[in-house]
Image 1 (cartoon, rainbow, N blue to C red):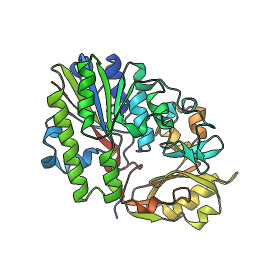
Image 2: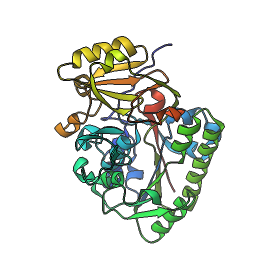
Image 3: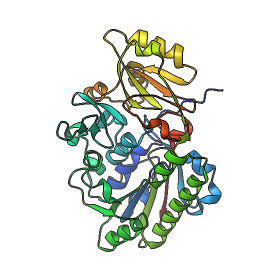
Image 4: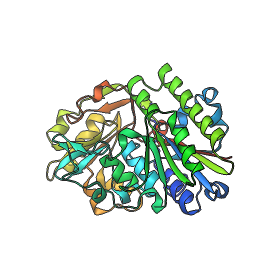
Length: 366
C-alpha cells in the first residue's frame, strides 16, 4: 500500500483557526472575505465531521453546500473534535489552547476531554475546565450558542465555549434552524450553531455507507433551510472540525513497545505512547520497526519542532503529550485499554491524511 501524503495544519494560511477572529473582529483572513467578516449578522454553522474530501466525492448530494463560496482549509493536529472545536472557538492552535487531543493526562489521570471523565468518573472536581483551556472562547466576542441540549453544562462545553456564554439548547436537529432564526429576529448578531449527527453516523456505519450519504443530504437540507430563513444581510459560514475515513481494524501495539511504555493516551489514529524513564529513543525505534508501515512515527520533540501544534506550545500543553506518537496513515487504529469499545467503530479520524485534515470553510451573504 502506498503511503499517503502527510497534511500538516496550515496555521498561517487556510486554516480553521482564522475563522473566528475574522468573524468576531474583522481580522484579515485567507479563508473569510471582508464582506462576510463585516456582515451585520453572522451565523457560524459547524457541522461535525464534514470533510472536504467527502464533499468532493458527493457533490450530487449537496446542492446547497456546493452553491456556497469558499473552499478547503486545514483543521488541527490531531484531527479530532475536542482539539479542533477548541481551535475554531479560540482562534488559536492547540499548542496555545492546550486541548491537545481526545484523551490526555490531566490531574494525575488520563482524561477524556469530550466527556471530562477518567476511569474514576467525572473529573471536573479534580480539573477545572477553565484551568485546562485558558484562551478566550468564541474569539473573546459576544456570541450566542445554538446546539443540542445534552451539551449544556458539560466540562468540555465550559472549556471550549466558555462557562457564561448564552447557550440555547434544542431537542431536535431541525430546531437548530428555528432557534437560530429566532435569535436573529430578536437582535443577536453573532450565533455559533453546531450539529454532530454526521459524525455519529460516520463512526457507526462508515463514510462509504448509504447511512452517511443520507445524513450528509440532511445536513445539506439544514444548510439550505438556514440560508433561506435568515434575514437579508446575514452571512452564513459553514465549517467543520475534521473529515473521516473508514478504518474498522484496530491494531494491537507491539509487545516490543509495551515493554518500554508506562501508558497510552490520544486516540486510535493518533496514539500517544508514554515511555518509561529514559526509554524514549528505544520506544521510538521499536515503534518504527513494528508499525512504521502503518503509521508516521514521531517523537514529541519532532512534532513540536515541525509545528504540528502551532508555532507556540506552552509548557502545560507539552506536558499533556506522550513521548512517541503513532499517527496512522493506513486505514487502521491503534489499541488502548482505556478505550474498551473503540473496536466497534467503522469510521475514524485523528490522523493527518487528506481525508481527515481538509474541511470546508464556505459561505454565503444573503
